Image 1 (cartoon, rainbow, N blue to C red):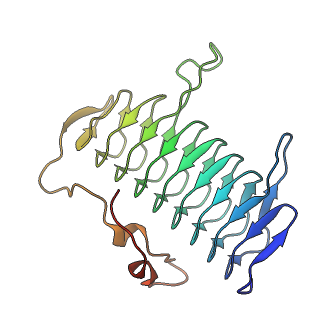
Image 2 (image 1 turned 135 degrees about the horizontal axis):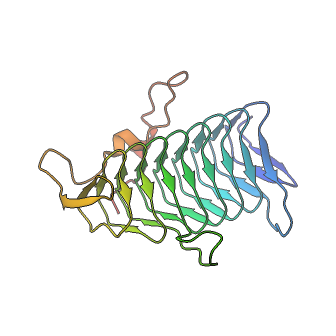
Length: 225
């Protein structure tokens, strides 16, 4: 895509985007009202589908076969890796990195500078098919979630917490906490774990099989929230 970007009835894409063949943008569904909007310098891999009524910031990058449904807001410099599913009605902040095979259901909120490890599953119904309440998790800024974690409905994970791989988080996690085990047990962050995620690990728009260096984020006004 050229420097001027691209516009059609179903989607608006900013300048200097790289969109593979086999990508569907602005997938229409009953009740949609707005085209998909994606900022500058996007990289969208083949097989991915992004629904209408979704807005994504600058320097977005996704892997192959990613599904992003409607009424989702995603900030700048976010990465969603292969075969992730983001159901509708989500809010995702800036500098979020979501690894492969992650499932995020509707009503989930993810703050800025969050890392989510591969194979993590978020839930939004405590008694599915037995009652009608839907309540997604709230993930505050600078949370790091390891691989294979299960986040239960309505849980709030406090800022700068670290969730160990394989944990089942079934209750709120206070800020600055290490949570591990099934169900997750809590303790203060040990001294060897930094209190915030490293921006240089989250913000560069790099790719194992493409660009290996991206220093452009250093010229932008990034600060921890």
